[in-house]
Structure formats: C-alpha cells, structure tokens
Length: 181
Image 1 (cartoon, rainbow, N blue to C red):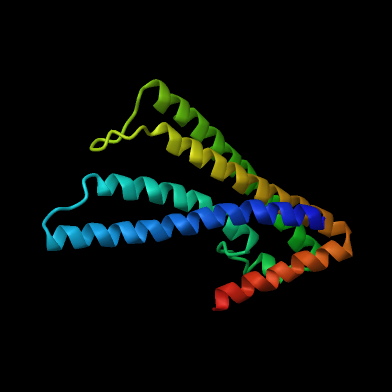
Image 2 (cartoon, rainbow, N blue to C red):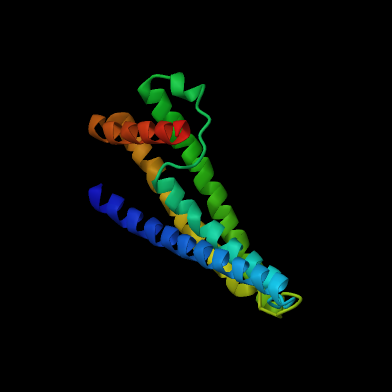
C-alpha cells in the first residue's frame, strides 16, 4: 500500500508541478503582454489564445494533485455524520462514480484529439494545432482517474481493514482542515 501511495503521489506531484510551472509562466506572460500593450501599444499577437491553451493544460494537470492533497471541495454534512463504515462505503461509491466520470472525459478527449487532428483544427490567430492540447487533457484526466480509482479501492479496503481505515480517516481530518483555513 505504501509503494502505491508513493507512485500515485509522484505521478500526481509531477502533474501538480507542471500545473504550477504553467501558471507561473502564464502570470509572467500576461504581465509582459499588459506591459507591452500599455507602454508601447504593442500587445503580444495571439496572447489570448496562448493564455487560453495554457490554462486549459494547467487546470487539467492540477486535478490529480488536488485529489492526493484532499483539496477538492467536499460537502459532507450528511455523510460526515455517519458511522465509519457507511462513511467509507459512500466515499468508495462516489469515488467510483468520479472515476467513471474522469474516464469518460479522458475518452472524450481522445475522440476530440482524433477529430481535431483529422480536421486540422487550429486556433484562429496563431494557427496552433489543437489536437496536442486534447492529448494533454487525456493524459491529465487519465492520471486523475487513476488517482480517484486508487482512493476508491483504498476506501473499499478500509471498510474491512482497521489499519487502512485509520489512514483514510487521517485524510478526512486533512480535508476538514483545508476547509477551515
């Protein structure tokens, strides 16, 4: 279990690092664009398209990392009041639903990438091909789906294994602390 935690953590951490670096460069790029626009009346051509595509990649890349850090919004005013085993069951059940949703989105990204490639879809100003961005979405959603599936399996195991249940419950307190801060 610890080795899986480590692998999932590294995979999601790499995606999170990519998202952080992407957001950092987007901030620098936007500041540079605004500076050039207002100082020299010479904006960067296609800046809107570049920022749009960069955000597209950075946001999808952040999902898996947020899952490993228990940073997604949880509304557990009903489930949170349940005893441990039903709580774990509902976390498992909704985790499986979320995994399925992420997998469907990943599959849709593949279809969209294939369509964009076959139809030569590009951005309107810079004429950037759109299909590579859909492949980035696919990879990011696949990593997110794997992370969700792992957490779901861990919740299922925790229903019957008190040691794993303690680990999972420790994550509950992390998510509660994130909402209080």
